[in-house]
Amino acid sequence: MTDTLTIRRPDDWHVHLRDGDMLKAVAPYTARVFGRGLIMPNLAPPVTTRKAARAYRDRIVAATGDSGFTPLMSCYLTDDAKAGDIAEGFKDGTFAAVKLYPAGATTNSTDGVTDISNVTGVLERMQQIGMPLLVHGEVTNPAVDIFDREAAFIERVLDPLLGDFPGLKVVFEHVTTSEAVAYVRDKASQVGATITAHHLLINRSDIFRGGIRPHLYCLPVAKREKHRLALRQAATSGEACFFLGTDTAPHAVSAKEAACGCAGIFTAPTALELYATVFDEEGALDKLEAFASLNGAAFYGLEPNPGSVTLSRSEAVVPETVAAGDGESVSPFMAGESCGWTVASG
Ligand code: NCD
Ligand code: ZN
Image 1 (cartoon, helix red, strand yellow):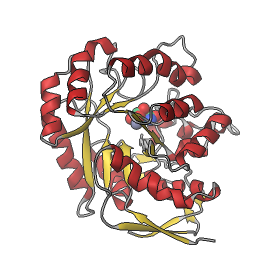
Image 2: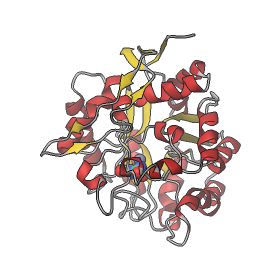
Image 3: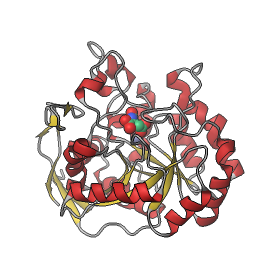
């Protein structure tokens, strides 16, 4: 039995680091193990310009100290986005990608895109220059059942989009369904997908286990068990189109434990450990490096990180809470529970 595992330093291709005191509190957890993080731009106000992205990047670098962590910035796409500024930002290294939030789909998405037809000029330019589009893949029509919104997005939005832009590189973010897994496989030359640790660990019944559990609520919401199993199979397959993106999304406890609680699960304190536990359970520890450290970098046309991280099979207890300034705290995923792997050194 393998008791230690050394892999190239991994990357997190989908991470919310927030800002201010929260940024200072959570960023070190991501920087502890990940070499790079693709930073989501859904601040309030969102990161829509090169200037805002550079300033945010500087704040992240300050919050992660001498860890060696490199934040890669994404641009929040709005109906009136300018193709020129976005393309310049890609060429000068400010932006690694553009993030499409359908308006109203999730946290801080009110400024998102109301109709894809409003951004065709930007998408054309991105296709020309090879700039990836990251999609939050859920339709927002309230008449569509929340558990069906990802599958509906494939049919109604994503498939037509790929038909119109056959050269556009797309990441289907935080996939949660067997439909999304099958679709990404089918389009693997053009489309990649991130998979979170929590969607590999919980299904929709877990959200209601013994009572309502706000810290297990995120978007896209966890689905039926058969979908969780499809995600586990995809993540551990080694296939190049699937890669690590935690979607760690901290919210203050007061915002989660509320009559209308925010969506988002904070996995950063033990993210890599949780993935390792899943890969171990699936008998696929030999595939963890591809998923965590190689496939995403290759999709983005980057070299894998130098250096490595060593994990060991020993119980690690997830912290109960993380202080986030101003008397606020954040509750990590599986707070107080243990997972089977620990990061031994990096
Ligand atoms: C994210 C957040 O809180 O910013 N929430 C979530 O449930 N995943 C936004 C997102 O990625 O949908
Ligand atoms: Zn996210």
